[in-house]
Amino acid sequence: MRFCGLGPGDGVPDANTLWDFRGTLIRVRALDALFTRLDQAIVAAGYLPMSGQIVDATLVAAPRQRNKEAEKAAIKQGKSAHEIWPDQPAKAAQKDVDARWMRRSVWTSTADVASSSTSTAGSAI
Image 1 (cartoon, helix red, strand yellow):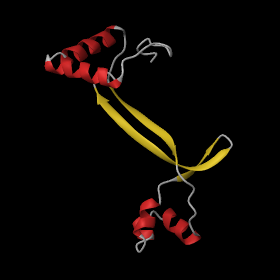
Image 2 (cartoon, rainbow, N blue to C red; image 1 turned 120 degrees about the horizontal axis):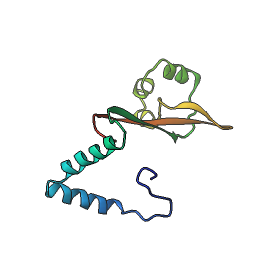
Image 3 (tube, rainbow, N blue to C red; image 1 turned 90 degrees about the vertical axis):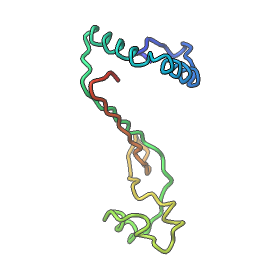
Image 4 (cartoon, one colour; image 1 turned 60 degrees about the horizontal axis):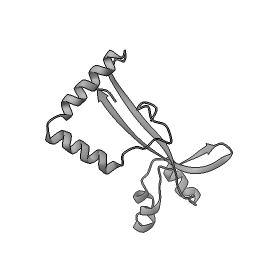
């Protein structure tokens, strides 16, 4: 928001408005020219867009798992849920063997790290 000069109380267009505007820019073949001009403005302001990567490592709460010692050992060995519970496909589908214990403040819980990354090469983010 700060990048665009917006504050918490400022009105912003909804997703459909932005989607429609993008579609209009594509139809009139102005989208590439707009981003070329944006890149020029960023470089003129003293920023040098090279390549970068944005990584989102959001913690997502996962239900507490009550695994037996043998199951915990198999998870630590890197086995998949379907390898640990081959005769119980429904149980295997509901188990998250990638969840790990995290400590956040004074709370301890299991969590998944939902991560995604976006890479850019030579264009502004």
